[in-house]
Amino acid sequence: MPIIHISIIEGRDANAVKACLKAIARSVHETLHVPLESIRVYANEVPSTHWAIGERTKDELNTAALESVK
Image (cartoon, rainbow, N blue to C red; front, side, top):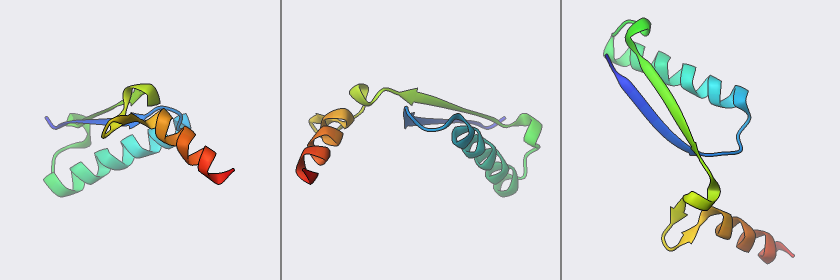
């Protein structure tokens, strides 16, 4: 039974996340030839304050990007 875990930054539309999970399940079904019923896919939504790229959290990067536009 394949178990697929993805981590994404929170804030996406629930329908978009649901569509992503379904697309991943279909892809695993088609590439590994396992029944859809045996595939588990789940997503963890992580707050932007808990997601870092290098030494800066995603919320800090977003704030810096907005300030550079001003």
